[in-house]
Length: 413
Image (tube, rainbow, N blue to C red; front, side, top):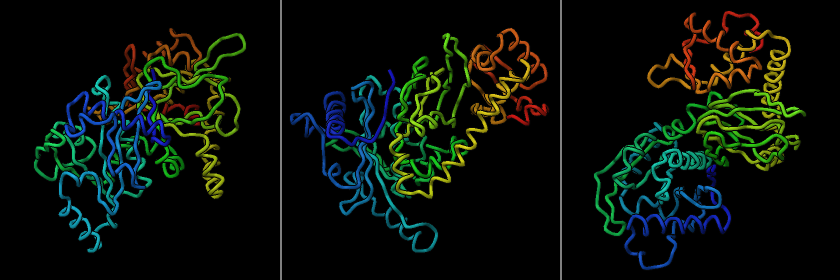
């Protein structure tokens, strides 16, 4: 079942957050001994101030994970309940007064609670962090502080945090805590760095703090042909297949999309039913944008309409290119075009940055190019012999861009 993450806004969503904290911290982990015999919620004063956002993850109707984000206020930040960050604050302000940095705006994450069944699924944890980073971006954060369990320090280190003090045992929490700090630029780079050059700035600049997230397993559908459209999506991790059925029920794969690809935005603009079906090929993480947020932006800031139109113009041109290839190009050209599209959306191999990896089975490419699988294999073997790529049952490794010496591909790609 898919997992949806969002900022809690309704009374029920907030109640789910506070109950989940109690379930995780008290019932499951034996923490917060002072509230063990109290009610079934964990709430403190940092949940009541204006600069707070509670993020919640749902599988179906069940809340499975949550965390809180606070911006600086007159009562400080939750992390300062456990450690004195005065030296950190002073150093940041001194750097600002010396003209070395912007005015510091501190934020803090806290109350990370994940149900035990999902605790080892890092995609849930990181999706929470990415929602939080979007909120922090909207707030103009420059630095993030926290007081975390010592056992999670390596996890936070992957995001850009460093310990700025020694671990200390806290009897009330019944855990060993560590103070941490990260420049927000590092957190944002971890969150959006790999896709910021693929998603039009229009979406990140205007909606970063409003994004929701959706986690899909292989075979799960994102949306179906004919459905009413309320959301647009950008792929953060994984692969999504876009397909369409004709009146006789014949299915055609239009594209296999990966990180940075934007899909579904045309349908939320014209209010027409979805023209295709989107299905996860692999585990996938998607950024979700509500139609209403887009409509509100255009109504409140008409000058943004030009940015949106430029983006849509590029999308229409891409669709025209694809239609020309499918209608007039011979089979070999269609395969090379499909491979070129796959190459552009493929992930960089972490062990060899010069190599790109497309995690798509060959039969998916054959359906996308509308050719027989044996013809696809012939082209793949030819490209392999030229040193362009290598392939297996579920992935293709690109050593250079396919079709770069082909004038037809240069025109339509």
